[in-house]
Image 1 (cartoon, helix red, strand yellow):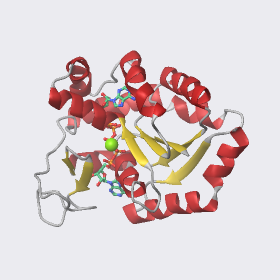
Image 2 (cartoon, rainbow, N blue to C red; image 1 turned 180 degrees about the vertical axis):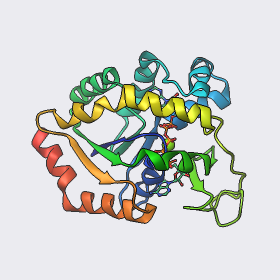
Image 3 (spheres, rainbow, N blue to C red; image 1 turned 90 degrees about the vertical axis):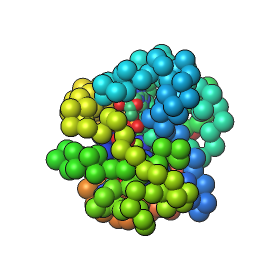
Amino acid sequence: MILIFLGPPGAGKGTQAKVLEDERFGFRQISTGDILRANVREGTELGTQAKGYMDRGELVPDALIISMMEPELQRAGNAILDGFPRTVAQAEALDAMLSRLEKPATAVLFDVDMAVLRDRLTGRWTHLPSGRTYHVEHNPPKAAGVDDVTGEPLVQRPDDNDETIRTRLAVYEQSTAPLIAYYEKSDPPRLVRIDALAPIADVSAQLENLIASGRLAAKNAARA
Ligand code: AP5
Ligand code: MG
């Protein structure tokens, strides 16, 4: 099963992907943002090309992202695509890859009120090596400033500042929101919505129910 997590910055995609990585579900999170940030840290060619776009809150060019995702998808079993696709061109490239690999996918839209996103992003603390995130109020770490699992320090992402957040939200509206119609209008429809305004545990429960109910699998079967 391949799930595409769709939603604006701060909607909770990364938070919920980590929950579903749990052994009960066996999903593997494939986060384009985490892969790109690792490349920036390691100073790779891809990281060097991507850094400026990320710092400004703009999208990294489609060609770079698509070639980065090809090998990831080849080895994907049960996977969550967190942050991909983000443009119609990326969605079309993904459909071509999925059809070559004979793997169906369902998009899960994190429905959220734009008004809560700034607070979620400015209050976020991230453990960069794992991509685990916390929030000062909504999901604090057990000890302030350190990751629960490794005890390593948490940082604020450089793009979680007011100016870059404004750009990221505008880019979402312009380039990524059209994917809602892309998946809703496909035949058969490939979009389910969850209420991502709810507390973190409630959002996880919605996802777990969806998986347990077979609704995602049924959609997949309908397409296969
Ligand atoms: P990426 O890393 O994907 O960032 P993003 O899309 O801006 O999304 P976020 O990670 O900010 O949000 P999230 O939904 O994961 O929220 P989270 O769960 O952490 O991309 C970064 C950059 O990389 C892009 O700007 C672009 O430059 C580039 N890039 C990546 N993919 C690309 C692509 N495909 N094409 C081109 N460029 C690409 O939650 C946020 C906070 O809220 C946390 O503090 C969390 O604890 C809290 N929280 C979560 N859920 C709840 C809840 N239900 N209630 C209260 N608080 C909550
Ligand atoms: Mg994320």
